[in-house]
Structure formats: structure tokens, C-alpha cells
Picture 1 (cartoon, one colour):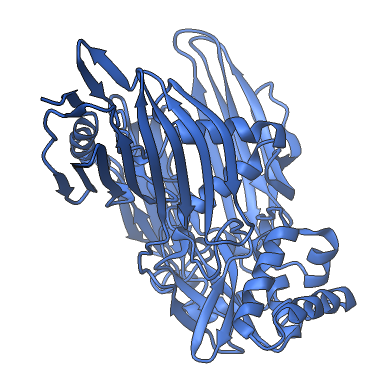
Picture 2: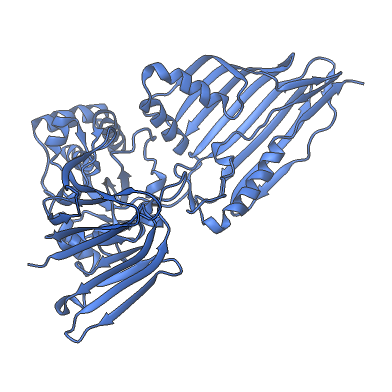
Length: 562
């Protein structure tokens, strides 16, 4: 039986004051903790849970190591991976500053030709070597010194794609072999139980002769009725829960939701399948280049309608029908297809649905802009607003909506909020009466209007001082704006700013003003052009955003009609 023996030694040193360090190691049914020791430390074994995601049965071993000033203390953890395919990624960072880092992988002779170790994002000063031994084994080694502590930052990619690491693969020689392994955890004939059949019948009654409408209603039913419950450890990270269990618990992880979708659709005669994939920004490799478990972290379903695959994410609540979440676009996927895998690519086409539209109809009253505002959130913007609405207590939702309409101005009064947010509509509509206090500043007989048309959270520059990581947007959406401002009788614009346009690798934006019959109009748009920005180029992106912000902050001077 092939297994992986893993030994990790951490030596803590305290130079200026007494301190403490923590050592942690995850384990499960297939990974055992064989040894955990440190001077004066007691290893604790606990379940790992959080308030939002429940990792049922996932377990962690941890030790608190006390270190006296001027002394050092060594902690050792030894593990055995009885399912070696789970040993496929070694992240080469620590929450502590590391004076000396040394990682060695010894591959026995009988596996040396088939097992591969691939370095990923190793920085300068971190060396990687491969050396064949006299007995036919191969030793891979990473060495480094003075490695800064790793910590997260706002809008930074996940450590799984941004941190230096080693990928270990070769347990499966091809996506087909990996597919056969993953499929062995699935029941190809799982149609659920009588309750699954009853739910399927009710869904078919909604769309008696339209399979596409049936697919939509089934997906929405799962979104509305199945709570997301993450199970990501060991075998449970790859084995879907039976459809009947997911329905009975009204909860499941991505695999369970996908399996229930498949069962409901198959009950109604639709060719539904499981799909193995990864999420952009969280998975660095793909099935073709690295056929290993580390190349995927998500399961969805697909419906084969004619010659088309309709991809269905059972965990992506708040999205309109047939909308593909941005995190899945362009991903290579393994689609259930009997004994032979079907490789496919989720469409990467951008969609105009990812748009936040703002419309405002104002009048100048004293020093205020007063009137009615409407925001229409579609696609990624809709999903974000939906998730915010459902994540706060009902009593807090109105205050959240007021902040949503007020941004980025602070002195704005919001009242008479109306929300039209049908569960499965293409958009969320939020409208309200607003008073933008101080947005019409009077200077003698002149009035300076502060419309500030670009109001996207993605238009904010990101502080770069002390930043260590690249920048990544998730749920990226563009914005379209239209403002109408009725001027006081007897006033007109002194002049209008020239049209502003920018389209580069970082941003696409435009601002244009016009005036006729006592009404000042502004039409504007803003769209981030890149979801990922390397740290070295983040200041260039900030410069582009500052230019947009300056154009947006232009005041419009209106004066008495001559």
C-alpha cells in the first residue's frame, strides 16, 4: 500500500521577549497524526468549525509552544497520508517570519518516473532542485532564508493561488484516470427517494413541456431550499452526499447540491450530470496540465439539452437564470459521461448582465440635490446585493439599502425606499427619495453642483504602501449612470466639462454632460478592465482610477441667465 510519510519540524526562537508560537496540522480518516510534541506543550485534537461554514468532522491538531527570551523550542508533527492523492500541494509560507526554510520530498525509485513535483510562484531567493539518488529515488528540495510572514490583505488573491508552493502529481496519469477515481465516489444511479420524486413532480408541473424552464425552476428550488454546508475534508471532500440525504437535511455542500440537482432533473427525464471544476482565484492549475485533486475545489451540475451543456451551480444563490458565475467562466471541467470523461470549457464570454445601473432625477433646492434615485443591479451586481441582503438580519436590511444608495456621498438622506427583488428575476431594483445635502453650494449668485457621477466601489484606488500581495476583484461588475438635474429657473451652466473617456488595460470609463430646456444631464459609465492586477502594476492602475475620480469630481458651475 502506497502512503506518504510527512514530518514537519518547527523551531521557534524568541530574541527580545518571551513569546509563544502555534503549530497546527489538519487530519481526517485518511491522514493520521502519528506524533505531535514540543517542550511543555500539550497537543489538542478538535473539530474545526466556524459560524458561517461548518466543516463537519474536519479535525485539527494544535499546540501552543511557549518560548523564553533568548531560547528556542522545537515542535515536531508527523503524519501519514494513507490516501496519497490528498498530498498534492505544499504551501511554502508561514504566519511567522522564517529565518531558515528547508523542504525535502523523497520519492522512492518505483515512483520516481511517474510522480512529478512542480514549483509554483517561488520568489527570488527560494531555490528548487531535483537530484537523482544512487538507489533510483529522487529528492526534490526547496531552500530559503529570511522569508517574511504571510498574512492576508484586502482584495488579495487566495493563498492557494498567490503563495509559493509545490504541486505534487502523477498519482493519476491523465484527466481520465482522475475522473475514474472521482467517479468511484459517486452513485451513477442516484435518483433519490420518494420525497425527491415528489419534489421533482411538483417542479415538472411548473413547466410541463419546457425542459429549459424546468432546469431553471429546479436550480432555483435548490437555491431557495438547500442551505450551503461545507464538507471539505478527506473522502468527504470528493464524495457527494446522496440526494435523499441532502433533501432530508435541507443542506449540503457543492457536491451534495449538485447531486440533488442531478437527481431532480433525471427524475424528470433530463440528461443531468455532475461536473468537477475549480474556481478562478482559488485554484491555480487545471485538470489538463495537473491531473490532481488540487486542480479542483468545486462541483456543479450540467443539463444536456440537445447539443448544449447548461451549467448549474447549486450554491450560487441570487443569480438569474442560466447566468454563469464569474468564478467559473473559462474553467476546464470534467463532465460525467459514463466510463469516459467528457472534457469541456465553461464559456468565458463577458456578459452585459454584470451591470449596476443608476438613474437619478433631481432638482436643485437650496443647497441640496433632491429627487428620486433608482439602482438596478444585474448579474454579478445582483448576486452581490442578494448576498448582502440575505446575510444581514431583517431589521438591518433597510439601513443597509440606505448605505447602498448613499455611496459614496455621506451627507445624503434616504427615505421611501422601495425594493423590487423577486427571487429569480434578472435584476434587483432599489429606488428611493434622496436629498444630497450640500451638493449645490452657493457662492454669491453662482451655484456649484457636485454630481459626482462615478459611484462604483471598484473606482477606489488601493493603498500600496506596505502592501505585499497582488490585487484581485471578485464579483466584478460595470456601472452605467444617468442623471437629470432640473436647474433653478433663470439659471444655466456657465460651461460644461469636455467629454471624458478612458479605455486602457485597467479601466473603461466615460463622462458626458449636456444641457437643454433647463435640464442638465450627465451620462457616465465605469467598468474595471482587469480582475487581476500584479502588485508591481497596482500603482499604474491607481493612477488610472485617480484620473477617473478627478473627472468625476468636476463641479458644474451654474450662473444666472444673462
